[in-house]
Image (cartoon, rainbow, N blue to C red; front, side):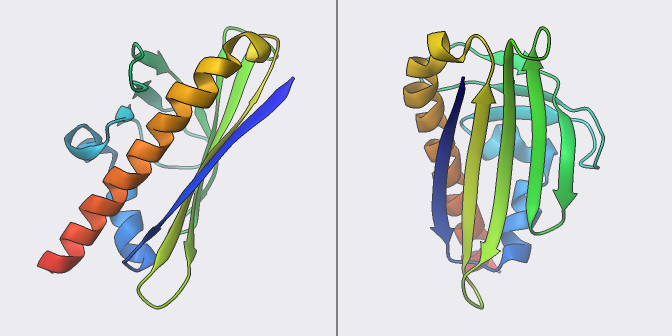
Length: 149
């Protein structure tokens, strides 16, 4: 079974400013309420260590591999639980310029595998809420930085 969560937010800042905050993994604990930490280098093919904590849920650590990295455009990774086909998630972050100083941040994930039907309810509520809270926090930080600059 395959299911998807798709969220987006518009940020009053150029994609370069959004990307600078987004790709600075070392500062995630300071602003990100959903992805609490990422360790590893943002390079295609790299394995990261990611700790997420959905609202009202317990935290989870996993080790996704970066499938695609296009600076100021996209970061996409795939994480797995146990073996391929049990519970796979392809997480995607995209930045689209929608004006000179405006960016659409698209945050989505496609879930596939045997456990998806059993986990979908929590994914569609808690994880979706986590995506939306992260999007809003990113917007707040980037726009605050832009006002200060």
